[in-house]
Image 1 (spheres, rainbow, N blue to C red):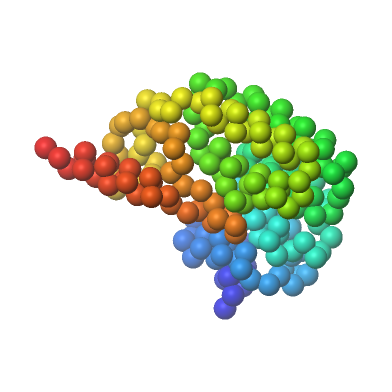
Image 2 (cartoon, rainbow, N blue to C red; image 1 turned 90 degrees about the horizontal axis):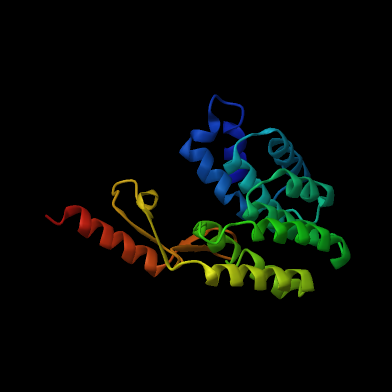
Length: 218
């Protein structure tokens, strides 16, 4: 059974989005081949579900597997619908496959305006890690080379470099078994590969090890 088939079996069940099997299938369906029927099914799911996780997996899968279908209007709709910058950027990636630079510029202008509103003294590190990953802005700059992509990447790097290296806060979200209060760090704890899947960096593994030592040291 494919990941697409597995995910379809759960959709419609009570609280289906909470099933680990559903989450795993949705995450990995980006490696399956989508028939037109599959595409329409998940397009409908995206447009009607309030579950952000499900919408993100559909967006990721569509930009990787479904660009041979006419999804131009869908990606424009997705850009307007989402509030998280990484998901907006994924929508722009899909939209760019069907359009010219002239049509992409207004979306990137809006994207950059939102990016610039992130206050420097508030460490949205996670958002920066996603946008700077191989699945994010670097991909668009390399593939298309549009000036609007280059300018957005320069602005992203400028803001990232201006952020404090550390910020007093909890780091417990990175480990369900260990919760230790310490400082958040700007150093990338994880990134996304070319398929949009999370890769834990060596810095992440080292930080978890340090957390465990602090937790269990008398």
